[in-house]
Length: 240
Image 1: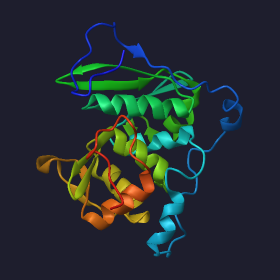
Image 2: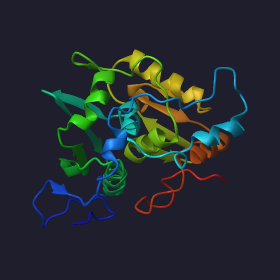
Image 3: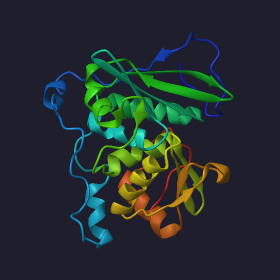
Image 4: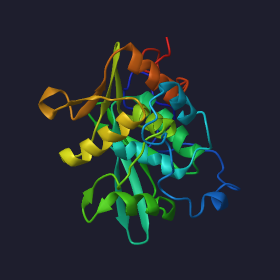
């Protein structure tokens, strides 16, 4: 049952509801063994920002490794035996639609349920598919980016869909956790793709990175691609 655009809790269908997703048959074999980290940014020293568009969301094939973008933000990954699950809490119904669709494109089925205060929890099933991601990000109970963590357009698109907030002309990308080292690693990955951000402390509306100004917002737009149909106008960066 579709969610209302106002963010109101759906009332008729028992939750969680499994959204239809594309059939992953035929693509799972190709992704088996796919490394969690893929080269996604220019070599150190490359400064021409025009080159960065080649690492946008519309280049290359979507893969499970793209879910690292959710973990750069407020997403969480948990292990259980030989499986793992990813979950993220969002603040609007349109984000649920976008995330379930994006996860489906990567062969990952997701469900959602209300989380109170007009928030929603989006989560995958426990699956072996997500184990490499969990292995890269978990150090015991601690979640942090792996060494050399990189962002590209596909990962940024998922992060923006889950936790990007427009404050024209800026965009604020919400973070997760409480570890400043975790935030710093994500900030370095943003800097590497030309999106140097201002870290907002928890008492200043964070933890989050503010991508300030029209120039950087336009760069963000180039990287994350076109606004999803479910995202209301004004919630997604534009290249103007």
